Length: 212
Image (cartoon, rainbow, N blue to C red; front, side, top):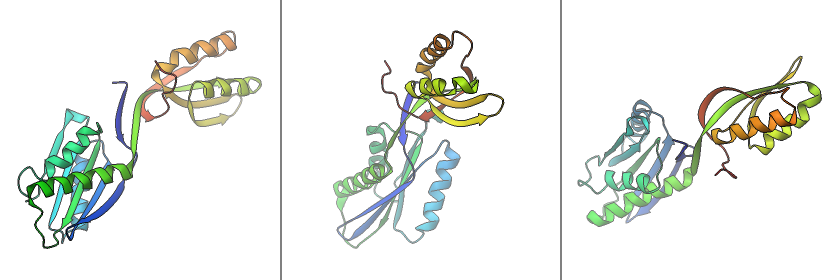
């Protein structure tokens, strides 16, 4: 998998529908343990709520889980899950809390309310595209540092650490599909005297502009 969509961070949003208060809470997670811990945290925070409906989607095991939390079957958890699936996001969990306001919404009203709660919460969090990235290192003499830095910038690399010792060592990551191009550019610019060492791989939010 070259990339996947998830949320940019934890967020919360709320609205009122016919005197019922709906509070959406969302956060990125990487496993079921993190998802269930977040759900438990929200249940504790909103212990006096009428319902704490949730849904989550994970890359790990392709897990998809939801709960209506005693709302009529199919009117709460499924609509929340469908928002996540429609937006094609994964590795996230959303809880939509409801404080009943005394006016029944009906099945259609519940579906619309929980869908809306999930959507505005997702919008508040924002979408992040996580790309498969190569984690790399480049060491160079001080005289070549500025030229090497420009090549990394042109390749869309994100420099995480620069060590100024006997030589300059830059630890960075960039989209994996761009690594061969960067390696070739470094070899050509420095006539084979310098090379990019790949030290690992991970997913990270980084630009994909110019990729084919």
